[in-house]
Image (cartoon, rainbow, N blue to C red; front, top):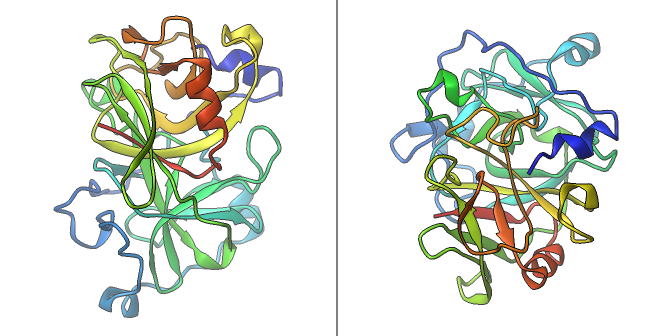
Length: 291
């Protein structure tokens, strides 16, 4: 699904940033302090008392940072290589700096408004003192630079003072590439709706074992999705730089297609009109896990 056609019409240019020279640990279950927390583990712990202070970032320095947007590649971001089941949703008071694992030097900027000019949805995973670990919509590296195994989702630390709390979604989207289904689960884990889905082929697979979030949605009939909204996630292809061609950054979306079953896509997830309508009713910031 060549998403850049849509975003070009709203004046969005792709941003690719050279990898920052920072040692960055992978966010897996074995990575100590920077690991993504387990479900519902969002309370400060002993590590919060020793978390570093948030450095001041001057306005000019903040403006000069690359924006962590859908098409950006920012080497200082943290790769997220595990699933997540608990999060909080925020908006931004203003543009805010994003930090890597050292939390000393900002590596990117989270813009207060997204590519559609709406308030940016921010998903927070964990807080430590004045810090929040958040998911970002940018890549850390291209698959071509990682032997076709790039992280499909990234995270970064940011100051909690920049965040405005929103209502936390009570549902969670789960995509099963094996069963070729998309399910909506309640906070208790009960499946409330389930739909057949078309997923990526073996050459352009839908990334698995990772959680992103519903970043934005919009309607663009020129993309071949009719009058059904494209549900854009923060996830990217981990196997190919641009599996659809163009310059969209290998984004993973959930959208309508007449062929909504089988291994048929470039990595995106295809759904029936009923399936898209069910996702359209979910708030932005809803977690999306791919199994």
